[in-house]
Image (cartoon, rainbow, N blue to C red):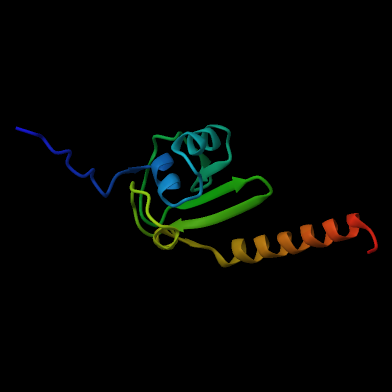
Length: 117
């Protein structure tokens, strides 16, 4: 008789799986590398990829020149569409405004470096 894998406990989701499911990283391997490299902090502390998340945990995710500060709203270890992935977390207002300001500054610097048209 075939055995079916039971769904994992929704109250326990590994950090690397959640980051992959929330589409911050394309693969779990990339998520694990970022965590091990110190680019992801959970509630202000460095952690391992196997650390289990809880709802309302704060994540600080550094991707290149961009930093996200998000609060976990839903635990999931399954990757879905981008619209579903965005419902897993809430980015803080400060993080959003800082990202937008940094992006605008990079655009202006690139425009200035290109010289007069």
